[in-house]
Image (cartoon, rainbow, N blue to C red; front, side, top):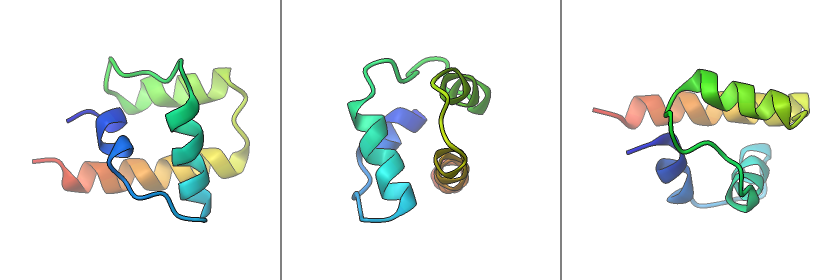
Length: 69
């Protein structure tokens, strides 16, 4: 399962990470392949994501990594 697929299954809450996931769901240019942290960081930097969004991404990525076999 890719990070994008995993993120689409998360319950969105009123938290910074929930805000990030909501934005991610609306982002038509979010990377689906390659499924790498580097690709996501590059995408967020190109989109001029704020520090809060970067922090929320890092938190979500860590959780995603823990759930992968």
